[in-house]
Amino acid sequence: MEERDPHIQTSSGEESEIRAGGSEFQVERREMPAENGTNKHSEQRKRSSGTKGVFKQSLDKTGNQLKKRFGRLISPAFLLMLVLSFGMWYMTKLGYTYVSDIEVRVNIEGHKMVIPCMAEGEGTDLLRGGKTVNIKWADLDVTPSAANPGHITISYESLRNAISVGRPDIKIISIIGAIPEVEL
Image (cartoon, rainbow, N blue to C red; front, side):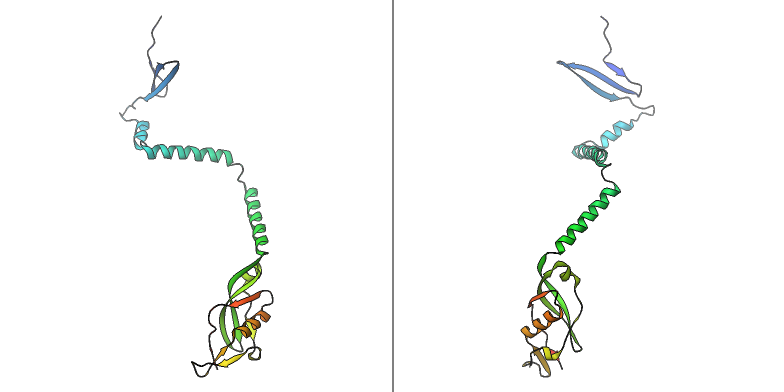
């Protein structure tokens, strides 16, 4: 029986060695150096050796497999349907009733201020912000300020009720913080 050389050279310049180990054959590939004495594949192996190189190679392989598998599913029609479904979900959520802190712009016969309030209402009404609420002095209970002469203090209840009348789409639960004194 003729004995064969265990080293086989392929057409790409690689050399393979076939070893028998038990009942399985193992193939070990070694690349032949190029004519100029360097081997680009061995240089790449040197650069990618170590844990980081193995991790990067497996990550690249996984990414390529995902692109092949899901590339045809992500089409413009799919993205359009995804955006439409998100929009419909968001509109449905805004239809629910929420309690939130909002800022209401108030104009009391030329005196403009922003009043922080806790309000209850539909999400769309709370997000809208609303228009400036115009209030007349006759609708408010006022008292002269004890600390600052020439200023008046507005009662919480009368201001809350006046804002509720001006913004019927939301329910004003309370006014947050102190109401600023108004100079006459």
